[in-house]
Length: 586
Ligand code: SF4
Image 1 (cartoon, protein in one colour):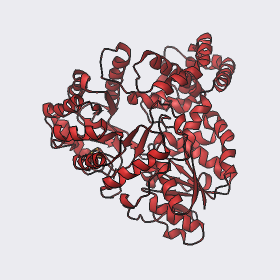
Image 2 (tube, protein in one colour):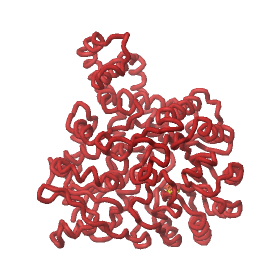
Image 3 (cartoon, protein in one colour):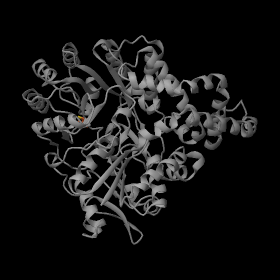
Image 4 (cartoon, protein in one colour):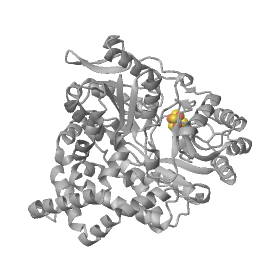
């Protein structure tokens, strides 16, 4: 079969993603000629173009001249904007933002865009360098202009709501070209996809920010080709229920969805497309039959040791928005701990699995021969100390010279001796799931049994002392958490800024399939969002005690505001990931 696998916008265009190279690896290894395209990267190249931005701004001003006055006249200043219908609010706020644009300044910013892109590509490691920061602010402002015509979609985000709340809304934005920035771009890039003449097109959707662009792409491809359009990626795995009641998804956008891990199912899907098996026999497949959505049984995941190496050969590695390519690789799958009450990692029932360290070391050595990268990011949920030890020993035994980063959580087993060993093997950064430093909250989260604040800090300090950078994920607004408890976590980050490269703050959200969502009342949550209003994965929730979602959002915003405007919190080498998705316009 001739296959084409696509990674749609919107994600950060700073590094390649792993999902499509994994699928290319497995399809090619099984005789299917497969191409991969990073449409996300192409999208940013397309829109960060002076001519495109000028044209968008001109259209904005024309729209403003034609329609703004009428909207402003309808607005009664004595009333609060939130008293108006949502459609009016969006129009009013959009025209207000257009009014604020200084045309002269915008024109200078547009003239600078190519230079800013060069600066960002040459210096993403050091966000606090003044020229990089200024370039980023310029690009951020221009992206803000570019998305203004589609303000209805963005406005939802501005109000602490999710990007798109439900399928009805998603559908509305997909089909309405005036609310969908991706149409024009796709019109220009789809001929390149069609030229490849694929029998199968897979679209990898791993995040909510890819839903609108991913399904728009699927719809246009379905209209323009006879190829089988299939969605894979982790996002739809969590939307099985939503999809089950939405046969229109299959009529309008796609042919099939593969839920959960796709390696075995995609090979069976190929057999079905070649006429060698029945669709009912393709595991993990969702499709339409006789007008009804069918969900086939899941199969066991392919052991990581049997998975061929990911194939990055189609990706334009030197074009990403970075000066340092970090290659994502999978060493472990699932989570060895798997007990945190807010986390949905266990929802598939798949057991923790890992790739033999010697195998992964050989794969990296092979990849180094063809791909130009300087670091590896093991994108596992949380690397265990035992695996880190085996991996480090294996690297040290081999000729491999590489720097690597890991996600993990703070455990006693990360001793100075282990961290020294890992450092000598190339460990340069640990992204810790710290979440909170308050003992009561950590216990409620079931994050760890190791809750002593001072001892936990000691591990972070030791890593810092050895030259390993620390990024800390922090979560605010866990059910029943008070403002004082949340401040304890914020103050921990501020007071220990010299040991922390970057603090990544997030607001707690109830995740469907997490232990809390099953018994939310036990966590003093009075209700979780109406499934009809929020059918795209995340729930909203109301708390009986502790901070509300909005209050925790304000704490996060205050912290970021302080961080970025006063510059008084001296984090060691601030990485912008906390702001990155906002920065890239999603
Ligand atoms: S939050 Fe991290 S450590 Fe906790 S269960 Fe989920 S993946 Fe594992």
